[in-house]
Length: 445
Image 1 (cartoon, helix red, strand yellow):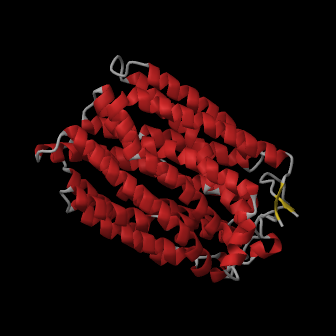
Image 2 (tube, helix red, strand yellow):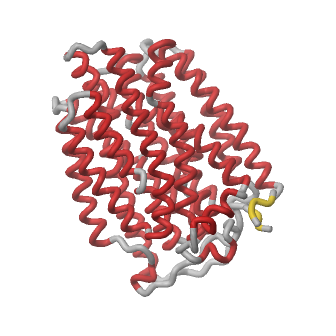
Image 3 (cartoon, rainbow, N blue to C red):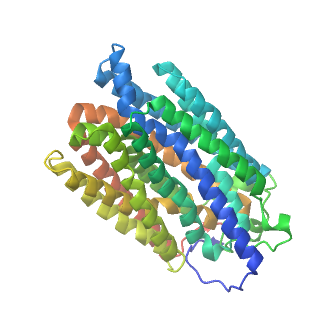
C-alpha cells in the first residue's frame, strides 16, 4: 500500500549553479507569463461597473445588466472548469511547455475579441473562449515544475508561481484602475492587456524549456509517496487507465477536490465582485474601486509565500492544518464583513476584504499546487491538478450568476453570510483531511 504524507524530510544535495540559475529563470518566465493570463482575465472584473453602465445606457436596467453579466461570468467559469479535464491529461501526454504557450496565444485572441463586443451574446462568446483556452495554462506550468524542482521544494516553488495570479493580478488591477481613473475606456484596457500578454508569449517561447534534461542538467526525482509509486518518476503515462486509476482510488485526492470546490467559490467571488461591491456597497468611484480591489490578491501573495515555506517544513497533515486555521478565520472575517455598515467608513470594508485575501489564498494555493504534485508526481501531476481545478471551478461557477442573484435579492450582507457558511464547511473538510494524513490512511494500491 502507498500512504500519502505530504510533509516529510528528504536528503538533499546542493545543485550546481547553472541549475539554480535555470530554475530561477524558469519560475520567473512562468510568473510573468501567467501574470499576463490574469491581465486578460481581471480586465473583465475591473471593468464590470463601466460595462454595466454601458449596457444600462442601451435600455437594460442596471440590475438586469448585473445579472446578465453574472451569467457571462458563470458560463466562462464553467468553460474554464471543463477545459481543465482534458487539459491536464493533454499536458501529461504532450508536455507542459507547448500547452502553456497555446493557452497564452488563445487568451490574446479572445481578449481582443472581447474588446470588440457590445452585447451579452458577444461578451459570452469571447469570455467563454478566453476562459477555455486559459484553463490549460496552469496544468502546463505544474508539469514544468514537476520536471525542474525536487519535491522538498514544491510548496515554495508553487507559492512563488502563485504570485503570478496574486501580485501580478494585484499590479494589473491597480494599473487598469489607474487607466480607468484617467478616463481610458474599458475596451482600450482590454486591448492593452492583450498586447502585454502577446509580448510575454514571445519571451516565453524563446527562453522557456520543458525540463533540465534539454540543457544537459540533472532532473530531480518526484515525491516518493506519490500515488503512482516508482512509476511517478516517468513523465509520460502508459495510458488513461494507468493515469486515472491510482488517483480515483485515493481518499486524499477526493478530499482535496472537495476543498477546491469551496475555496475556489470563495476566491472567485472576491475576484469577480470586489470592485462592484466597493462601488455599490461602499460608494467608491470605479477607478478607486478597481485599485482597492488589488489589495485582495496583494495580501494573498504574502499568504502563499508563508504557506509555501511552512508547508515544506511541517509533517503529518501540516498543510491541512494550515487550511483549517485559515478557513476558520476566513469564516469569522466574513461574518464581521456582513455585520458592518460599509458606508460608515471605507477603511473597514477595505481592511476586511484584504484580510480575507491573506487568510484564504495561502490555503487555496496548496490544492492545485504542492498537493497536486505530491499526489501525482511527474507522471500525473498535471492531470491531478486539472481534476482538482475542475472540481474547484464548478464551485467557482456559483460566484457568477448565483452570487449576483443573492446580492440583488439579499444585498451584500446576505452574500457574505453565505460565503461564511462555505468557509465553515471547508474548515470541517480540511480537518478530516488532516486526520486522514496524520493517521496515514491508505490512499492507493
